Image 1 (cartoon, helix red, strand yellow):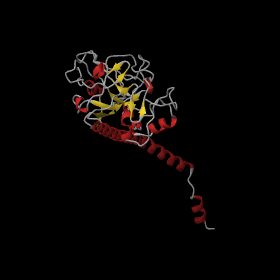
Image 2 (cartoon, rainbow, N blue to C red; image 1 turned 180 degrees about the vertical axis):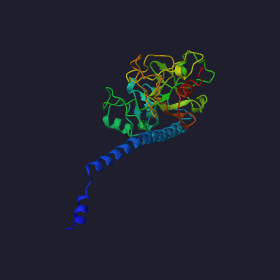
Image 3 (spheres, rainbow, N blue to C red; image 1 turned 135 degrees about the horizontal axis):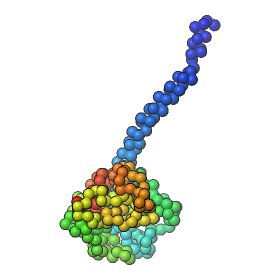
Length: 301
C-alpha cells in the first residue's frame, strides 16, 4: 500500500477537534432556530384556534336560523336539548356547546352526562378547538374538567358603549343565562348590542366570560390586573378589572405574582387572544383594554 493510500485511509474519519467543531455549529444553529420554531408553532396554534372559532360562529348562525333568530344561552338548568332531557344543574346543566353540537358533529355531545365516551367525543370537536388549551385537572370525568372547553361565551347581551364604566351590571334578567343564581333568558341575535364590537366567544379559562368594572376614571392598561392562574378560582382576588379571559394564551404568560399568590403578575408577558364577535368575525386582540371593551363596550381611561 502506497503512502498516499495510507494517508487517505487515516483521513477518512473526523478528528476530535473537527467533531467538536461540528457539534458546536449544530448547537449554535439549534439555539438560533428554536425561538423561531417556537414562534411559528404559537402562530400556527393561534391561526387554527381562530379557524375553529369561525366554525363555532357558523354554528351560532345556523342555530339562529333554526330557532327564529335566537342565539343559545351560556348555561341553562334542566332544559331539553334536541332529543336529550337535561335535568341537572351546575356542571350537569346544558351549556352553550350543547345547543350547537348538531351543527358541528354527528355525535351526540355528552357534556351533560357522566359518560366517558360522550366526553371524549366532545373533546374531539371544535368546542375544544384551541390547540394551545389542554384543559385543566379537576375531579370531573376523565380527570380533565369537561365543562371548561377553553372557550367562554359572553352572557351580557345589553351592555352598550354608554354603559356606566364604574357600575356593576345588575340586570340579571338581561343575561343570556338561566340558572338558579341568574334568571335570564334566550335573546335573538338582533338583540345583541353593537355586534361588531361585542364579544360572543373567546379564549377563556371558564365556560363564560365576565369583566369586573374598573373604578379608576383615569385608568390605563396598567390598572387591569393579571389574570388568575389558579383554575379553582373564578377571580384571583375580585380586583377591579379582573376577567375570565385567557389573554396570554397566544402570547407569553408573565411570571406569577408575588403579592397575589393566585394570579399572574400584571406586568410582563405578552397579550394575544382570539375573539369571536357577535357579527361572526374573528380577531386576535393584543391588549387587555381590547378585552375590557369587548365585554363592557367602554374603557374608562
